[in-house]
Length: 342
Ligand SMILES: [Zn+2]
Image 1 (cartoon, rainbow, N blue to C red):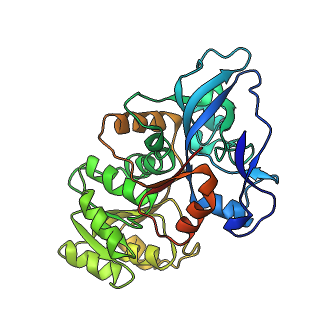
Image 2 (cartoon, rainbow, N blue to C red; image 1 turned 45 degrees about the vertical axis):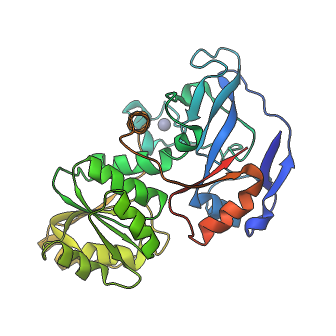
Image 3 (tube, rainbow, N blue to C red; image 1 turned 180 degrees about the vertical axis):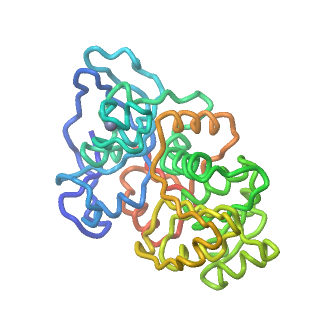
């Protein structure tokens, strides 16, 4: 089969479209014909050698995958050939303390396709059969590959962790990113009033189309001050944060009393000063959130299939153009997800 791999760390052109041996499913596993695979920012970190994830070279990236079952290994009853499926992007162990409690995001032995084993920048991928989510027929493969890291992460963050309620103000940062476009929609679905923030006006125009009622460009405006102005001086109840650095610091200043910042990432700065006096006097909460449970992922797949949430796909590229997709993501030229199709 063909796959895109890299044999050394470096810039996008270390990615090579090449022929590799066909994978075969072992007992309990399924061979999935990849129809769509998302490109994620952590793919770039792995390619650059900065991810701190345990990968072996040459490596095939890609952990957000949709496709159809091509063959099954011994003892597989969960799926059959031609089933439309998407592998869980975090494959939990089902045995540790956290898995037994259903808190799969804390699994101590979690593994990922495209990290510990070859991923979806390929024509085929092997996954445990139990870890395949069935896809409704109404869901395209391109959309199905654009759900897990965005909508399920945001559903867990805004719904489960920050407990967003109807009528609350929610600020969504990086509104042009995969998490941001999902954040605007999930906050709306939960009944919130949404302010979208990003560093480019074309991203903010799109956020308005997706349901934001106001926008802030944080490369030209003071985020904290502008959010206070938009909320009549009150501030927002919840911030969906994934930027870090100065944007996180300004977001804390944009909180109403009892406000919460829920954060899922911090590429722009991982260490941020916090004014402890303001934190306790206002009863603010800084909440971490990571991934989602398998149940949350299945729930969100259902919401997308029902049309209640709409994945935003910036562009679909043939697999052999993975280098170009990496360039676009690195230069932040996208609005929504980038998808590869073998
Ligand atoms: Zn576990």
